[in-house]
Amino acid sequence: MKYSAVHFHTTAIEEWQKDLLVAELAHIGFDTFEDTEHGFDAYIPSANLDWSALETVLLAQVKGYHVEYKIEDIDEQNWNALWESNFNPILVDDTCYVRATFHERKPEYPYEIVIDPKMSFGTGHHQTTSMMLSFILENNFQDKRVLDMGCGTGILAILASMRGAVSVLAVDNDSICVESVQENKHRNAISNIEEKLGSKEVLVGGRFDSILANINRNILLDQMETYADCLSGGGELYMSGFYVEQDLDILRTECERVGFRYIENKVLDGWCAAKFIKA
Image (cartoon, rainbow, N blue to C red; front, side, top):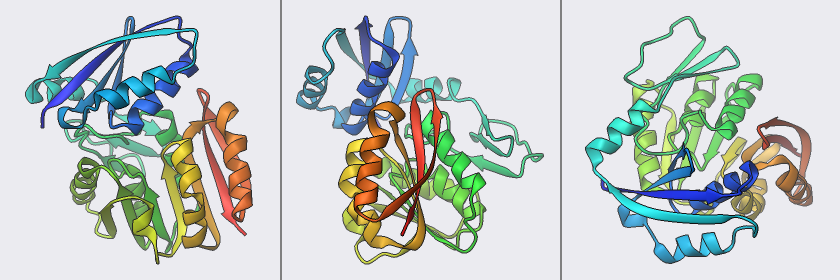
């Protein structure tokens, strides 16, 4: 697959403003980001690069900083080498070791997840994914029916299965992510994950005991009623992909409106993950 790199040069931009920009870019199809000396690089399948959507995102940014960019086509072979060179193993809560196929095994940890990066979200490196993994490690998933919404590589679905889930539905609107889940579940010898391409429409008629949703604030708000409809009474909703200061209160209000009760949240570098229970 042919990829394009968009090199962003940012001036007088705060870290939280950059994070918001990255989140908006992810929403229009960019799937990998790398910090540089003067800004950051964003990568997207060339066929998915929408100039008008990109300009709309940039025009909507907070005033007070300036963003310039240039686009470069990336050779697939060079892209894979770049991605692998920047992918390092991570350890979550001294319990879950996440590595790529080209890293050595660490059998001393209770959970080891092998992920082929394959140019999609969900390697565990982002703060939101790390916090969601931590929530899965801390809570009971034994014999539960689990939904992983916006599944990326399937890393959350895989850990939920390892933690005893009886079944996991992994949903994403990106076909690359769906293919990645299919490959990664076999790579980790998981047989009870079903992957589907789509969005909230594929949840109609479904019933779950736990929902994992690591997306972004706007999508979470849009899909909240659907989560409430398909989650069993007493079921848990774990969400991330948003900021504690700007977003948590807004999401909490919407959750309570549709019948969820706030339990707790985690914060890492301004990013937030929260747990709710359906009344």
